[in-house]
Length: 251
Image (cartoon, rainbow, N blue to C red; front, side, top):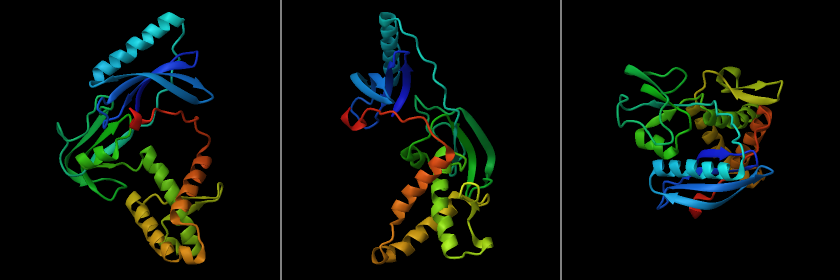
């Protein structure tokens, strides 16, 4: 995972990456960028995050001084990611607090209460600038908020599968979980529908279709989900080109 990036106006720069499973989990790489693709080389490996961050700044400053280049200001990611503490009050040691992704805001409830728009109760919410990993959520028993970007994208993709199934089976309006957005020809989950409800319906559809998919030669539900994710992405508009990152398994 890339934690820090320094990019110069000559399309070269440095990154700081983290791989928790590696013997030396932190590394700084130099890279060259061309046509949205990055080639990484000359890795410096570290055991401590602060040492890796110092190395990143030293390498970047030395390069800038040697080649007389200017650092390119990068637009920060304005998305934030909220997670609910469902099993215990928020206190020291009850939430992830990694060196590169510390909480930026907390909402602490006095009692465990129902979360609006969700199917669970919580003791409070913690907001981060970057998404947590699945392992971090499991370790601290946190639940992601439905407004998180990754959850919205997941629900968008699921809504396409569920909406088509509801149309094909003539599901009554009062029992539907989705509605059709006619302007774009795509489906969206109704406001009161929780991520859990939508995921449960998708699993039910998958079980039904798996029994006859081979016999009728239908596209498996997994392929339908891939197509739905692609459709949802296209309807949200073009995104910035993705950039290659080092293979964490090779570090």
